[in-house]
Length: 373
Image (cartoon, rainbow, N blue to C red; front, side):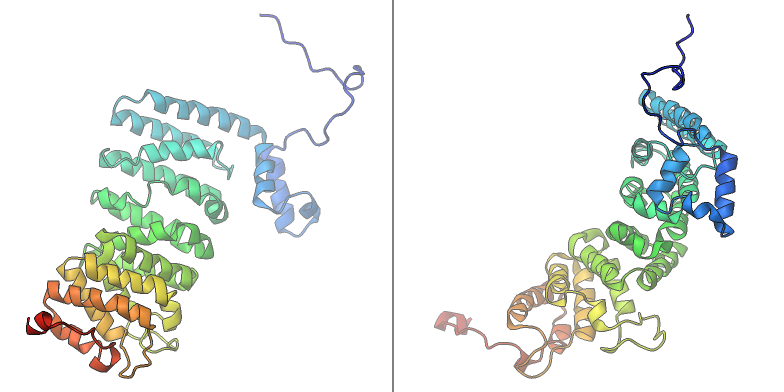
């Protein structure tokens, strides 16, 4: 084949009117030197960009990144021809070798395609060996991109990873909890976009009462309550109680364990309870919190209704005067649900302890047949 023509030089060809400056890519040695100069307080701060997007663009200009991108594209193209689960393990292992080979580059080429292939390998019908290899690949990616890039790309890398715990085997569960503890719980305020899914996964782990998974899940939830914004965290917990029937009992147990005693935040750890105010523990108490309790009383099983009634009795007392803490409309909504839950679960004694007779509105007038009945 004939050799392709060379790019014309600006000196010999009058057609090239403009040549972009700094078009030559930085080598890995030059990048390491720039990082060292910046960390030492030298003059490289004007050369090395500050934002993540500019840093990624700088790494894309590295000569090794082109080889990294080509090898990763070749590895991703093989997933189309997978015939059985053993093929997926082999392709994931090749991806891990490529990631290890270019470990000095903290960026991932075509991260959307990488996230799609990893999500494909988290299917619940696949065996645990595929899940373990996929989680190992996640570990390599999260370790190299860092917390800042992970917080930026949560929408890509969290697909399917939080719903895996319910279908995971006993070999996969501790690895998944390790991944949560090392990379997600420590994000602080950056974890807010994925808090509903992460809290749902940790509440699912609380189902194994008495095991190490239960203790680790409670510990990670407490760390999220300390590091993440408390309003977003508690909204996620109450939202799981409202929308996910599979974790309602675990959500009620966690709320009962960590419900603050007084209206003001406690000075220290009071029996494991969170040192926050009741207002912060129950955000949107006149809306989401009440709807969550009503749904737990109406749609839960016997154990869920009993636990919800105990939470109401101990932590949501009504005053004995007409000026109740809850508005009139909310009392009218909660009272039928409470009575219905009591009739189904046969805990009328607990119901009698919660609302004093003077706190409820007078019953509507009954006809003669109703009074006789």
